[in-house]
Amino acid sequence: MVKQFVEHMQTEFEMSMVGELTFFLGLQIKQMEDTTFLSQSKYAKNMVKKFGLESAGHKKTPAPTHLKLTKDDQGVSVDPSMYRSMIGSLLYLTASRPAIAFAVGVCARYQADPKASHLLQVKRILKYVSGTCDYGLMYTHGGGSNMVGYCDADWAGSADDRKSTSGGCFFLGCNLISWFSKKQNSVALSTTEAEYIAAGSSCSQMVWMKQMLREYNVEQDVITLYCDNLSSISISKNPVQHSRTKHIDIRHHYIRDLVEDKVVTLEHIATEEQLADILTKALDANRFEELRGKLGICLCDQA
Image 1 (cartoon, rainbow, N blue to C red):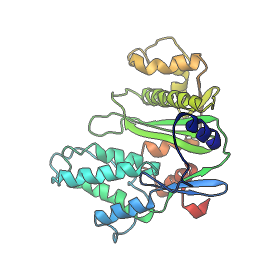
Image 2 (cartoon, one colour):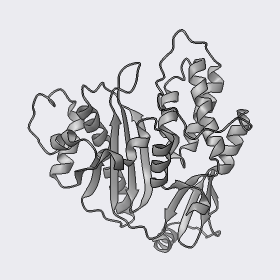
Image 3 (cartoon, rainbow, N blue to C red):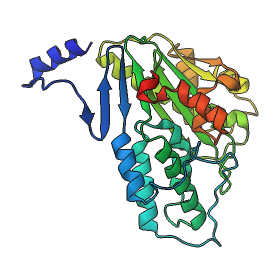
Image 4 (cartoon, rainbow, N blue to C red):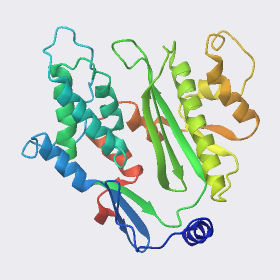
């Protein structure tokens, strides 16, 4: 595929090959016989040093399982410029470290008026990063080209406004190619509704990626999206309005058209196998490390 891409580009543009890619926009790239490893280890180490935490103790996870940040109106204010700098630096690191996306996303909600409690959590993320600087994403050559997705939601997880958090991760074969962790725009009235909204967001992402892959002559049949909520799967396959769905915004029902047109199919998966769990909530160390590994995040020599 790479050779065909280069040949096609050379017919359209004047270009030359400058050798094997090893560094691109802060990403370190190590190409091996059967795998390719992407990391931001140099960036991560510089970031930890920049914020003075290179000698601090390491953490096994980016957030404690009881993580429940609030606006903390009575808390002690901290320097917003420094806080935003930390958040911006961590957000850039999520390009190769999706396991920190949820924790960073939660802390990013308080950039307007950060408090000491928020800064404490940001520093915990940095302590986790400090101990895992050399981790990155491992990609297997010839891992297949069928796209699959996983979606999840943490119902009413935000203590401030009771909005839920959507999470999704998407694989091409066995390789992770996209992910997101985002607070929903509206308040979901049930777990089912929160999961349904998360599934809709995931479907939009998969349709976009399907169109992108078509540009490279990689066609996709029906794309499977795994969800651990049976009720939301049922709603996606039932076009009839009833009491549980009549209040849901029309735009979220986009998923029904995709299911009916056989673009996407929603399949149930056990909660224990839900890979998007790591993108919607803080997990204990064992569960966190298990899902982190399944996403393909590891040390280069662990391939």
